[in-house]
Image (cartoon, rainbow, N blue to C red):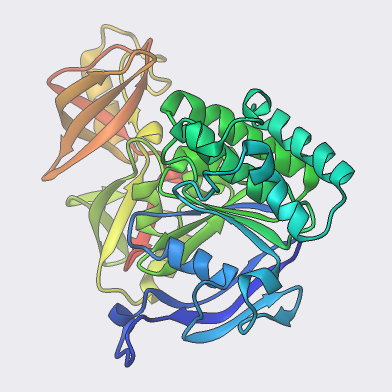
Length: 383
């Protein structure tokens, strides 16, 4: 296994790139630590597969270096880099048995038959392929073929890294969770550097210790699933992570005060100071649906008042920091929780309610807790 360092790396498929739009991978400096389990997460066309193919040696980068344990490997082939790669669709030998497919990489590096047999049986057990070891690969189902393809990447424990390019695309949904868990167990057992490319945030979160979120050819945030959820450093991360994604509102900063849809937002002095010196063209405020408080009689803010004192409640709601009167547009009951679509000014947004909370209708007050309300200048978090 190896530490993989992408140093000032960039790639363009154009012979004469003129700007950022001509680059599939914009300049980055990124490190995959030895023995880590990582995911590259992002939408189609963001550069995930290109980056993976650069690491493996299938694509030569236009600019920058790929370093394995501090040694440049730009000119080395995938075989010389000692990389195992599992592709979106199965890459196996149909005329061989499952056993011989799994044994092939080991025979290529001169392992003894006893070593091969032990390792093949071990991987077959992990991937639940024991019953089909003697079958020809052409007679397997699509998900069995992909498990064999994955097994060919996993069977060698002396590789620099194993790269997975959306390997569960052809797998039935009910088997995906089981295979992700198997990959995690294999990583924990062998401590191999693994990089997993996917556009599915659930796959990324269940497999990886850390996730690199890609957007427009860049890694816009690298962190744990919790960090990506609680503190997205780019508006795209907020939008892409979570279901539903983060709510965003246009903001304005005038006379040392921040406004959302024309209404004053409570800010601490430190954030006001940062906003005052930050240059930007656009300002946005973001909050996740999970952190929006839809206020009712049981809310901590109100339950200390007499339940019949509506005038006192209204006065309290109108004076409380970051409380806003909204219109309820739609309620989606998802069984264990509800998603409420609301409208504040001209902006629609969502709140997630626990199953036991009363479903609001008509007009309702919501509160945006200051610790969960994020401010973004030109799409990047002001922290």
